[in-house]
Length: 196
Image (cartoon, rainbow, N blue to C red; front, side):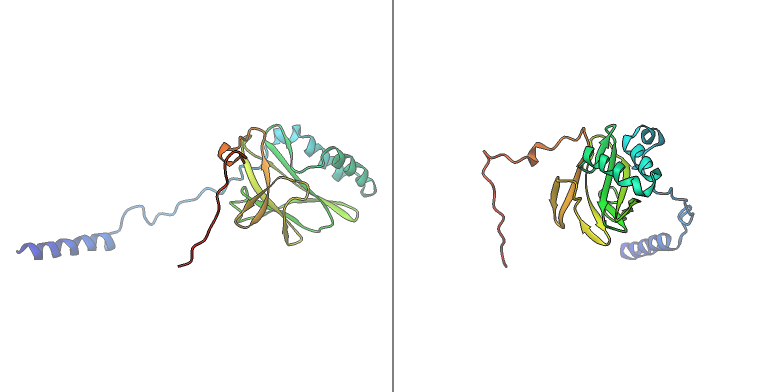
């Protein structure tokens, strides 16, 4: 047999074994583990949370007295999120809305917004969501209020992105990369475009 014919026969046999020879285990089904919501706070942290105690108190307060409890909280906590125990991020929104969602880095990379829980407070409603985050995390997020995407009106820290501005939540042990800090002693670059 000539070397050329031997080579062709070898390639043909190899092709046959790759395509038609069943490989054990390839057709077995595996049970994939469900996506674990690692941002759900554990019960111990929730029971220690002042924010969690507040929302339970607010929900159990008669509707006509909720604004008194709510305004006391808002005066003490004018900014969202409220950070507790170095790992709880308690996001909230108060205003005229029927639904509020939160979307960001922790919602499967912006692909699956979470509904915020609602407590009715007369003309306006109080919405909240509590996450357990690593104590050195920094996340971007936005709120979706009755279908309109906005930055958090109670969070003045925003960050630009390719899709507009996002609200930013930095946990207590987050350390900003010094490369990102503005330094007035360094001259700034210029973005230019070329057309071909």
